[in-house]
Image 1 (tube, one colour):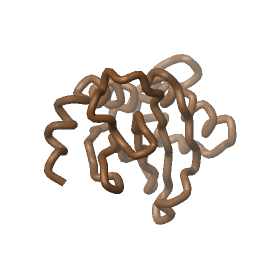
Image 2: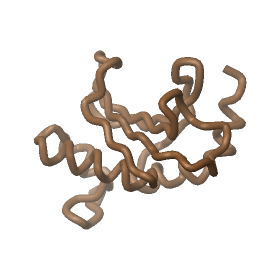
Image 3: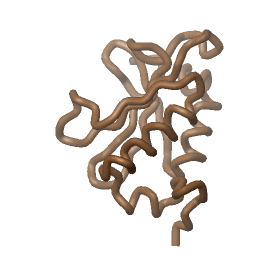
Length: 124
């Protein structure tokens, strides 16, 4: 799909936000007939973030709620968890909190700088 670069530029703030929150690289990837923001985690887990059901909107300033979904390989159809919020970082935090509460969050992910009980965990 030829518009990855365009969406990467258009959603530069969202990419930077997730990179800062996760301490991991973020990318715009193909998502069906559209695009999504993807972050890779340990043990085959990854996150997809979109601001419409179909993918990333052509207008990042449109009023839309962010959807953050976590998946585990090889099952890429059914999300492990899905959260929605008006702000991307809130949807991400809600998803991580729910996964952690359910005992479905691996410590290597949180040890890489993700929020741990209101504090950033040291990567060392």
